[in-house]
Amino acid sequence: MVNNRTKGGDPGARYARQLPLFGTEGQECLQAATVLVAGAGGLGSPVLLYLAAAGVGRLIIADCDAVEETNLNRQVLHWEQDIGRMKVRSSEEKLRAFNPAVEIITVDEQITERNAARIAADALIIVDCLDNFAARFALNDAALRKDIPFVHGAVRGFHGQVTTMVPGRTACMRCLYASAPPPAPVPVLGTTAGVVGMIQANEVIKYLVGTGGLLCDRLLIWDGARSLVEEVLIARDPRCVCSMPETVDSREHEENEA
Image 1 (spheres, one colour):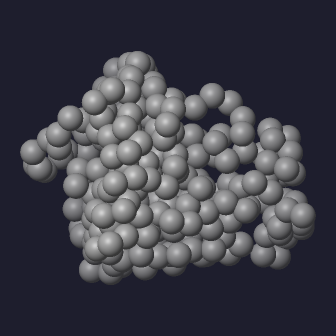
Image 2 (spheres, rainbow, N blue to C red):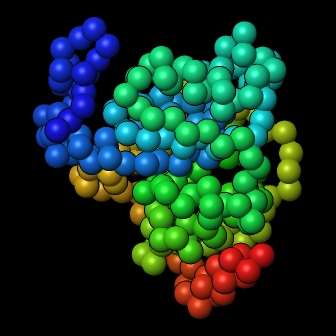
């Protein structure tokens, strides 16, 4: 039975406008799901808000940073009074108030090769809202080992991109990026993060309810300066770890021994 009672409201009211799209069965899929959102910043804020709004039952938020004033132009879950607080605490507070029916799990750790698989272990799908490639690659590798779909998003200025990666079926992050770009400050407009984050959340919802087509082997590129959406086809690299299951298994064995 769908638990969609709002505080002080009627049962069914909260999700009434989306139930015609995928029915009570789809809503139950959302309610039963656990989603890992890696990063609670510019992308993570809209992702978390819209997944909570849709009624995803359990959200795991992984972020090790504190809120800074420079975050406030785009990280809409964090407000002036949150400066100095951990982002996971600020996010948890807002989301619990927004939809009390959603269970929030917080992880205030830097994602690394050593802990990525543990952090992702319970997730049905992972959302990459990160801003550093070491953590992205670590989570990508964990997704491959655990056979968990991975929704990648990235932003810069007026531009952003989204793709959905499914282990054994599509390209992975290491196919898309042969190596990590050099770290550097990235200009970001808040609306860019909002558009890209909402597309990521939409990918997650479609995957969980089993409707629509995912961005598999398709890189959606948002050009906010010209208000254009383009698409680039991507493919698995036969030399990549995602094309060599024995390499993935070897990495998992090494991690278990560590």
